[in-house]
Structures are given as C-alpha cells and as structure tokens.
Amino acid sequence: MGRRLGFYLTLRKMNAPELAEELHVTRNAAYRWVRGESMPSAETLMALAEFDPDLSMDWLLTGSGEMWHREGTAEERLERARILADQMRAVLGTTGPGGGDDLTAQDLDEIADDLPEDPEDDSLPA
Image (cartoon, rainbow, N blue to C red; front, side):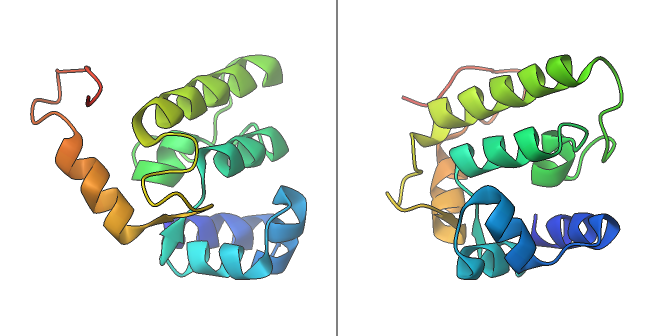
C-alpha cells in the first residue's frame, strides 16, 4: 500500500505531512504508511475516502482495479467507501489486532491467517 499511497500523494502534489494534517494524524504515522511500515486504521481510511471520494480504496489497499472511482455521484462513491470501512472494521476490529492506531505488517499477517482459504467464501473469521 505504501507505494500506491506515495504515488497518490505525488499526483495530488501533496506530501506525508500535508496528508497527516488533512487526516488529523501525526506526521510519523503518515510517513510510516508511505514507507509501507504500517497501515492506517479503518477510521483513517474512511477519513481519506471522505477527503478524496474519487480515490478507490480497493486500489489503494490491494492494487486491484482502477485508481479512481468516477462512476456515480460523490455521495455514492462515499457510500461505497463507508461500506468498505465497515467491512474492514468487522474483520479488523475498531483499531486492528495490535490495538494501536495503525496496522503493522504483523497485524496484517495475523489477519491473513484468519481469512478463508477459498476466495468464494465470504464469511468473516470468528
């Protein structure tokens, strides 16, 4: 995700401290995201989706699909981002398994271990 976030910031002509200010997080948190050392919380991703409803959270998080959501109204795009954030909260909990503001690579590994093996299985881990 870090490379994609860095690419996004370059296109927006922003830097990590400016993103941190927009999302009301520390500069260090934003730098860690861009370097790929941690991931933003679901709430922070939601704030990013509200800041730029055209940015595809699917693309940002997974690299799949297009970078920009252009279909639908801004309200519809924001609603899709809210649904994604709710799904993330269901899987990750409010702040993620580590209990902190950001998700670490270890947190993501633990989450991946709990995900179903079958991509068609949309059940959430217990």
